[in-house]
Every structure is written in C-alpha cells, then in structure tokens.
Length: 416
Image 1 (cartoon, helix red, strand yellow):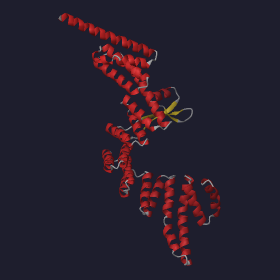
Image 2 (cartoon, one colour; image 1 turned 45 degrees about the horizontal axis):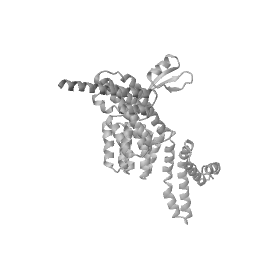
Image 3 (cartoon, rainbow, N blue to C red; image 1 turned 30 degrees about the horizontal axis):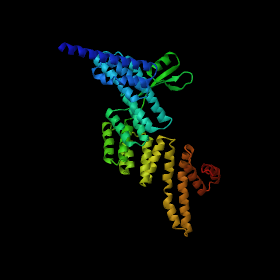
Image 4 (cartoon, one colour; image 1 turned 120 degrees about the horizontal axis):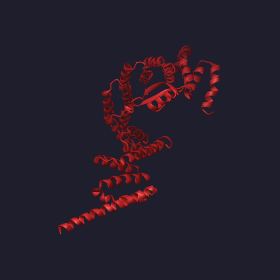
C-alpha cells in the first residue's frame, strides 16, 4: 500500500511537470508570433504551480512572463517579473536568462523614460509625466534623476502631495544631481561641444576632430530640493516644517549661498522682510561679489522706505555687474521717490508762485539725477514701463527732440 502511494505521488509530479512544460512551450511559441495576450494566458495558467515548480521551469516562467507583459505595454508588471527573474537566478546561482533579460529591461526602461520626456517637453502633460518618470525610477532604482524629474513634474502639475513625497525621498537618498559634462573645442567650427562621455571625447580628440578638453561640473540640485520642500510646506500652511527643513539643510552646509537664498525667499512668502534682510546680509558676507545679493538688499530697503540705503545697494550691484538692467531701473525709481514729497508740497503751494517754482526746479533736479540710470535701463532692456517713464521725464524737462523720437515707440508698444 505504501509503495502505491509513492508511485501515485511520482506520477502526480510527472504530470505537473509535463503540464508546466507544455504551457511554457505554448507561451514561447505565442511570443515568437508576437501574440502577447495568448502567451500571457498560457503562462498565467501555470502560476498556481509556481511554488512547486522546478528551477529550470521557474526561471523560464519569469522570463516569458516579463516578455509577454512588456509586449502588452504593462511596463510595471513586466519590470516586476524581470526583477523576480534576476533575484531568483541569483539565489540559485544559475544566471541562464539574466544576460538575455537585462537588455530587454533596459529597453523597457528607455521606452518609458522617452515617453515621460515627451510628455514633459512636447505635450506638457505633467500628470502623465509624473507617472512615467516615477515608473522609470521604479524599474531602475539607480536612476535617481528620474525620481527628481517625477518630483518636478508633480510640482508643475500642482500635485503638491506627490511632489513633496518625491522631494522628501530625494532628500533622504542624499540626491544632488551633480554630474560631469565632458567638453572639447571643435577644430573646424571653433565651438565648444558637449561630447557626452569621457571615452567619446577621448576618441574624438584621438581622431583629430577636437582639442582642449574641459570638464565641467553641474551645480547641486540639493538647494532646489530643499526649497521646494519648504515652499510646499508653506502652501500647505505648515510654516514651522518649512523653516525647519531649510534650516536643517543649512546646518549641513552653512556656507551654501543658495540655501541661504532659499530660506530668505521663504521669508518673502511669509512677509517677514526683517528676517529676509538679515539673511541677505549674511549671504553678502559669504559672497561679496554677487550682484544679485546687493540688488535684493536694494529691493528690501526700498520697500521699507530706506531710500538712501536702497540706492547704495543698487549702485553696488551695478558696480559688480555693469549691464544689470533691473538694477539701473530700480535705482532710477529709488531716486525718483524723492519727487513724492516735492509734489505734495507743490500741491500745497499752488497759489504761492515763488515757492511753487522753486519746488518745480527741485523736481527737475531729481529727474535729471535719475535720468541717466533710466536711459541705461531702457538701452539694456526696453519695456513699456521704461519708455513711459522716460517720456514723462523728457516732457517735464522739455527735452522735446528725445520725447518726439520716443513717442511713436510708446504708441506702437501699446498697440495704438
């Protein structure tokens, strides 16, 4: 009786193995004909036997399943099957299908990533881009750049909860996004080109096509990640968390001006201009040749009616960056602020002609002082605002030739 039971069990195992083999062969044949649904049906029919499946059939099961799912564009499930194959073959120490499957998974990852890039750049379908960038990362966890792209896409899609989740994950991973760009000068065009990789650049130089190799390192994305975390917390009404996130980042790198600026910008959103000003002063001490820092200090002081200080900072920004259009414009506006008190006094002395005329001369003096800076701003970056302000000053100073030359420009800009 005992022998009969043993014989029956062996027969059952043989039957199961035969069934597995038959269905996997059917799946393999269907895959060759690109009949992915048919292949998946055959594979799925053996899934209940997976726990008792022989190793040789189990590896083939994962390999065929991954291909069938990929053929049906079920990318995430296909990636799971590929990774299950890799893990299992590593476990048994027999990488029979791994070498064949790795390029298949790479092609799948590339396909998903290309789709995400097109959704981001071409169609601006940010919600879809979020899903595909996140899937790219899930399929290839080494590709942390895709997780960063998913976070940025979620921000653009106004999906703050998803964006925050990915930014926090990036922070936890210590992601910086720093990479090296391998450049060299084209001998024919004289242009400096990005040659993609160090090996490609070396080959191009060896062939005599390029010279003067230069390595450039991209800036860290860490400050932007922290800034976005802070801004999302502010938008969610979690001000304390926002400040904590930025201050924690600064503790790890207190000399990073970008992190200081991010915290400073947060205080602008919170309308705490005194703290903004303190941080800008701190940033200036670290980076005293940065014109943007002095420009921002000019803005803060102008908003607090500290006009003389604002003028000083705008002039410093211009000294550091002689083509700083916004600094010239803001400097002229700060100088023109003196006019407000003069005009108020003029309105109080409409019947006192002597006093009124003296005030009028003062007003013109203010205009003459501000005019060179306004003209410079207009020459660097003409706008409707610069042209309108210039016209008012030219008319007041009776600079008729300049006013007449500028008037048609202003009318055209206004569509008149």
